[in-house]
Length: 281
Image 1 (cartoon, rainbow, N blue to C red):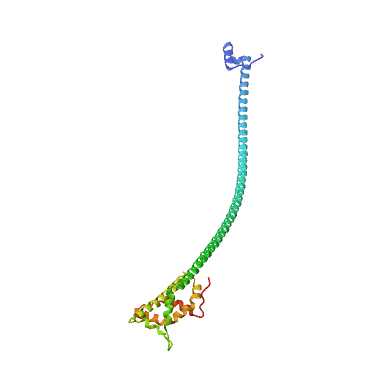
Image 2 (cartoon, helix red, strand yellow):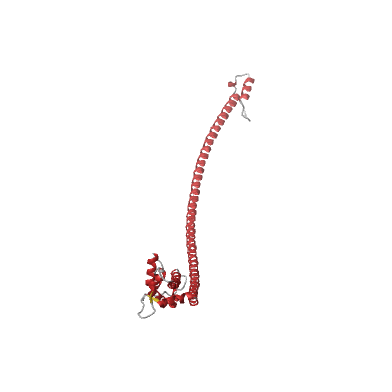
């Protein structure tokens, strides 16, 4: 009996039920049943084979996955290593550029500082020169004013009668009168009880001393030119100082004023010293 298509269990059961004889006695049924068993066994073996293949495929996929993971990890480590190397290289370049910039800035700062110091020094020198020039101009103007003042004093002395009247008294009253002359001792004028005539002469003498006291004060405070005054009045100051020394001492004792005509006395003593020289300005 030729079987075209495999029978299912339902087909087998239907055939058995349709047979009047027991199915196990019918060869056709037995053949169909055996074919069914063989088919089932084939399917079972096919399923097992597919399951084994599936496990193998899964294992292969797992292995490939592991290989891929390893490769990815290696690639990732390689890329990270490259990035780290590049980062370090960039850091080194940045550090070198930073050092170069700092050196340039330091050099520029030093250059600017040097330029500023030179400019400041130049300005200070200019200011100093200007101050010196201004000081020289002021001193020159002051010297001119002092000399002019000294000349004014000299001219006023020539025009005034104070100087001449006082010198006239000194011709009559001297420190050491000569015998057989009209000269009198100058200390007479310092006495309290004197004639009206001598009192008038004492006033003239005091005016003369006051005139030279003012000159001495002006010289002391650098108001007039001492050089001009000394050249113009040296001889006169020396004579007045020598002739009125006793008179001045008596006046100081009488009025108890030690400072009377002290500036005139100091000036005369300086001028009379051989080693004393008026500084030329």
